[in-house]
Image 1 (cartoon, rainbow, N blue to C red):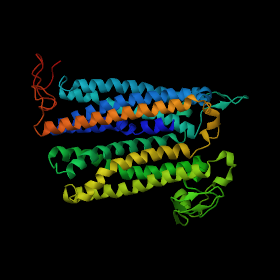
Image 2 (cartoon, helix red, strand yellow; image 1 turned 135 degrees about the vertical axis):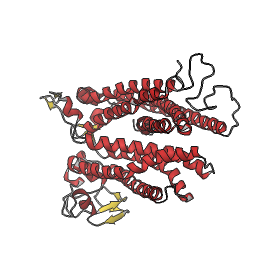
Image 3 (cartoon, one colour; image 1 turned 90 degrees about the vertical axis):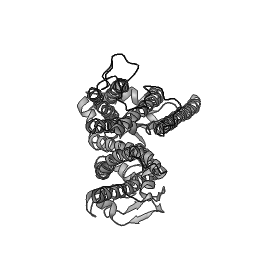
Image 4 (cartoon, rainbow, N blue to C red; image 1 turned 90 degrees about the horizontal axis):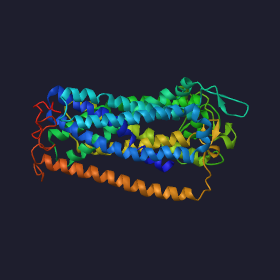
Length: 462
């Protein structure tokens, strides 16, 4: 489950955010009559379709694993939080239909009609994120049910089960995070082209639009990250203690950047900042922070698990801080000189920003899941009670098959993207080997279609 979810989550930023960024470029192209912007939107929509196809494979594997690997959790709690997965499934099918319509609409629909038909795409993507985050936030702060004498959930309140105390902070932190991640990854592709000397308007626009979106959202995400950490402090104090490796309940608690927690409560390595943890948690050094030793060892993460969650959290904070500086650099140049930064180091950093964001996406998931151990449903069901028999020999066979499948799938994904990129680059350089009339790269996306007998110059043919 860790391998498949860790792989699938790398695709999530593009599934959720790429439709919105593509439509933003599409709108710019139509509003300003910009053929370059329309060409970028057309190409990004092709990437969006390929990515969605890969997401189908990895998402289907996850849906099977929920039933095969977690029978205890799904059997007992499925009626309480299962609606979130139902919402995600409906959003998934709706998004598939809308992507098909959007791809089909190029040169077959009138330009503005095509754009308006694509506008629900980001909403479908956000609805899918809504369902998944609702399920995860319930697992962190379970609500909306009572337990009968045998410990089974009864009297389910769907509204309370969906809108748990952690839902709001988790959802907005997740949405903003995946949008800025997609923005930095897309912009990073064009930053590499810029560093290689491709200084045309195509690369400039391909970099500027997604990077501007990401740069605006970066400080917002920093604030949201601080907010969700404080929500964890109030709603899941033991999980907060794990992510901050706090052993003893106390005030004036220091903050450790990295460092390692040992089973006896000592900490080695890292950078110790006096009183900062209490200040960050409650804006005062007198704030009392709950320590891991406040609960029995069976009800808290192990020292190794706490260290893993702590490092994942600190990596997120470090990368987020560096991205804020990068966004400020970009904003200063745009506001002061109305131009992109001239330093090659800026574009080198921009090229690395996308990969750094994907790393933080992984770290965010690790912090969320490892930090609440040993609970799969916080303070209601342990992982050991929910998971299938780990002694089953078929589990290792399944893991091996899944690893092979994912290597092939992601290898095919990267191969397709590289071939698409090469074909587009050849077309832009006028060196394409196939330049037949009506070729999608031979003119603008809303150009004439010579093979159509009913289409007009505005692309309004059937």
